[in-house]
Image (cartoon, rainbow, N blue to C red; front, side, top):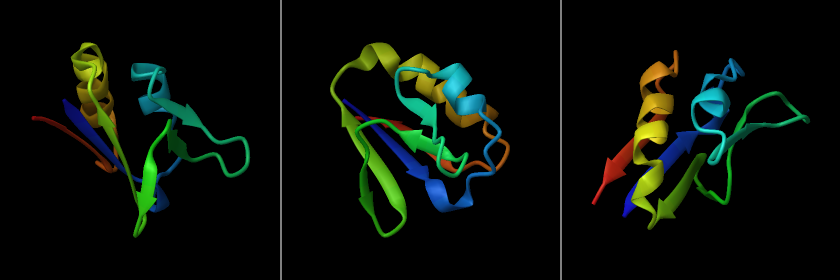
Length: 76
């Protein structure tokens, strides 16, 4: 199980996460910020519990290259 968290309100719209992990992140056409696909919003944080560990490497890469460090990935 992987838990992916995105603090969307601090996103600068660089698109790196969507390039690194296109299965989990897309850029909003409305405001140009990142969207965590199927993420559930709570107090400005979008969280996704992903049972498929096959996306671990690409989501960790997305978190690592984010210039504002608003993505966290934890493996349980």
